[in-house]
Image (cartoon, rainbow, N blue to C red; front, side, top):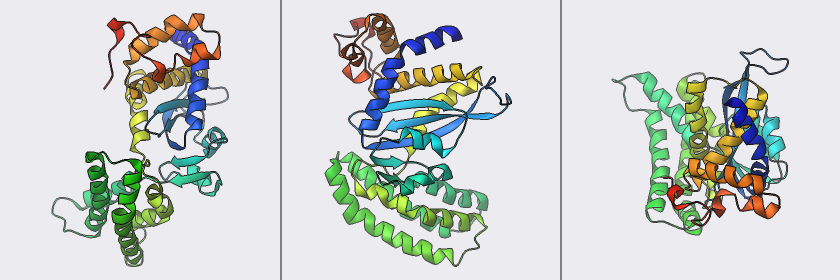
Length: 309
């Protein structure tokens, strides 16, 4: 079965190439990565950590997910992928992404969900009988920001309207929070959980306020984390990949399946359809018609027209 999956992945390579071109043609990307064990990597111990990377096109009109296997977590992976990209890139605070802050063609955006988790760690460490403190204040600020996002979504505001809302209402909250964090940074022991949370927020600040610059941007990188979750869940069952070729095949098939789901196609019906049509595909147009957003009722038989989500 593994051999069949690898052969199927090879046949689907032209589709993955087109997906990657479309990702880089967008103006907003989310990136994340998770660990992967590959048993037979040349020159490496079977227990070594490898990584599955996710590059997600964040433009609302065309969600695309590219999974890539790499034996390293080095920022060079992201650097190579983004070589021809211009726009916004959203990540967590991993230092491997620091080079993005100095790339002329990229605006690096941070993740408020990670900031919130660090202040939640402070609260959880204090136990049930704790008193309200600085961590609660930080969460209050963050809660106000997300309340605005919830209201914008409930009202179905356009990106332009979201931008205006953030400039008039979110920016004052952020300015006030930054002043508060700055005061706290000199009042709090730096090695404690609270001190680390405050320091993290301040060090990430330029990235964290970046989402104000465009109404299409999210305040956090949760979309990338959600995109990589199906792989994480699957990993609990199959545990590892046998070879780099197998890991690469998994990455390609995950890219097709999760992109189909993101475009509200039933993934197994989509795979069946492309497996039936790929042998006859020879031109660029033939392959483009097999991309998920080009699927219409005339392409997939009625018995397979199940929408996902």
